[in-house]
Every structure is written in C-alpha cells, then in structure tokens.
Length: 357
Image 1 (spheres, one colour):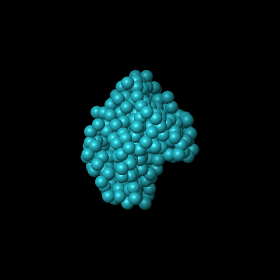
Image 2 (cartoon, one colour):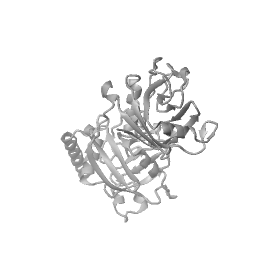
Image 3 (cartoon, rainbow, N blue to C red):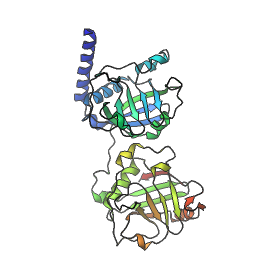
Image 4 (spheres, rainbow, N blue to C red):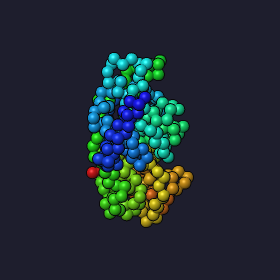
C-alpha cells in the first residue's frame, strides 16, 4: 500500500511538471487510428491534472499501439488501456489497465457530443487514469460524475465510425480499433472567431455534385452571420451535407447537419448557436444571393442557408442575406433542373466540400 502511494505521488509530481512546462491551451492532440484521424483540444481550466497527464503520456508514446475496445453505437467510445498494446491480454482484463493514477476533477463541463472524459471505476474516488472515452452524443447523466478534460475539434465522423464497430456478446469490440499514434501539435487558430469585420469579406468555394460555386461573403450586410458561416466552413462542418430542398424559381436550400453523409455529429457542432437576425430592407433577395434560413423565430437561424434561384422581394428585411454567388450561376441552373418529389430532389445533391479561399 505504501509503495502504491509512492508510485501515485511520483506520477502526480510528473504530471504537475508537465503542466508547467507547456501551455495546454496552445496545443491539440492528433489521434491516428485504423478508422481515421481525429483531433482534440484540451480544457486545462476544467481538469489540469488530467490534461497534463494526457500530454505527458502522448509524448512518451503511451497510447501508441493501444486501441478503442468498448463502444456504444451513438453513445461513447472507450480507449487508452495499455493492456491492449499486446494481443496476449485476455478480453476479461480489457479496461482494467492504467487506472488509479489521478484524483477526480469534476467540473461544470457538460458531456456533450465530442467531449473527452476520463474513465473511472464507478463509485471509487481517485480511480481515474490513462483510459478515456469520447461522447458520440450528449451524455448528461455523466455530468459531474466524470472528469471531462477535452473536446474533439476535427474528425467526429471518425468517432461515429468507431462507435458503429461490431460489438461481441461480452460488450467489447469484436475487433478493437487500433490507435496507431497520438502526437501533440500546435493548436490551429480559429481565425474568424475574433477577426475584424473588414477581414470577413472572403471567397468561399462550394464543390457540389452538380458543379462548383464560388461565393463572396458580404460582412457589411450581416457581419455575425458571415462570421458564423466562415467558422463552420473552415472547420469542415458543411462537408458532406446536401441541398435537401429545391423550389423552382425560388430557392435551393442546404446546410443541415442531419443530411451529412458521414453522420449527423461533427466536431464543430459547438460553434452552432442561434443567430440574431441581421435583416436589411436594402439588400434584395435576387438570383444568386445567399441567405440564412430560420424558423418562426427570426433569431433562430443556425446553419441552413439558401441560394436564390430567382427574385423574392417578400424575403427582403426578413432573412439575413450574407453572400452572393460570383461564379457558377450555370450550376444554379443545373440544380434548379433536378427532378423533384414536391420540393425534395430525387437524387442527392451533395455539398462535397466547402472551403474558404
């Protein structure tokens, strides 16, 4: 028992040293798995010891060759047990390694989609360790019960793919998803979150299954709507969504997360928030204008936008126009000619990628 306390104390000292050696908020982890690569940022203000330990272990190669071995489809994925670095570890011992290293660091951080949290032995204080889990969907029952310490910033499609892996009758993965390598890199800047309004005038390329469109954002019309659109575009949020509604002579609408081919959840979902309507009577909804959709509440717009296929004066002053098509009006024509069931295209018109030029 005394030896165990000494080992644990030494581990905490090492973690504290790592924390002081580097600013955890300036880096992110790049996790390469057999199912693809995802990135995660850290929340040292919520769980400093857990963050420092993860950084230390990642740099030492602790996670390289381990695996995600437990998954609940649409729920969570669990990994980080060093025992899975060897095929000799029996299945009944999966999930037992690398625990009892850290004290609990419960906080007000919610277990939302994409949040990374520490595995612990239920009911045992101080049993956190190297193992971690990622929330595929929100898990509110875990709030205040587990130490959340990070968040996925890219690759939620990979997380979803892992969660859908085949599970054996014992509740573990039929075939664990190998973690090939975990590296720590400088955090990529979210350049649009605080950019001055004058820097928000950008060109955006929409590569669709019907052709390529180029948009020019117009922050002088709707600055915060443009900012939100650029942040989501830069984060790849729109990639793989589709144009789900076409009203001939009126609009082609897209930008809903539930239409995403790789799965509804995305790392940038945390950026999605209701937008205050930035409506202007002097900005006309004419062919080629791009505007933000909303529901009955004028301040309920989030991600869905529409491309004007023709003039619609009744929308002026009621929807936030924020961009204009500057290339690819022929693509608008092609989209408008699609065969429909009501206002639903009979074939999928995918927004393959959206990128800020």
